[in-house]
Length: 189
Image (cartoon, rainbow, N blue to C red; front, top):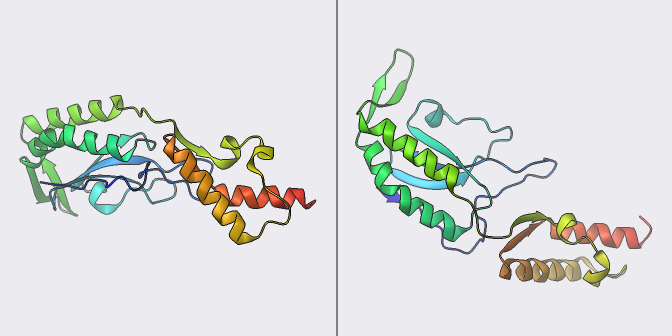
């Protein structure tokens, strides 16, 4: 079985919140039984639509917190790998009259799936989480933003602020947009 691990380059790699959306995308541990791959990712579909292989049970999904760190995700994947192996050993693709669907008829597979679900439900982050910039930088007077800052200056400042937050175990999203809003407000906009 292949386990897709995170390199740690991104602190919270399965967190995604699209512009205009009020909440983040759901995150999952996936077991692709066709490719025998165990991985974590967010559901890229707005509204959390289910992709065909998941609908047809070739890929199984267990909900996880989207604010788990790369290190926590790697540990979670490692912890559930033996259970995933038990699930894969029971996998068969069968024609149901309409589609090829994944089946897991071995007695042990459903028990392993339940254990994976329990572990996923019980796994919480020890990081300080993911914050929207407007929530994290409540007092914009501390940001040292001036009304005549260029786009390049704002990009540099946003990058510095996000790196500073990440060093404290926090991912801040939307920093550049927030800083642009601060400049706009300082200019009377």
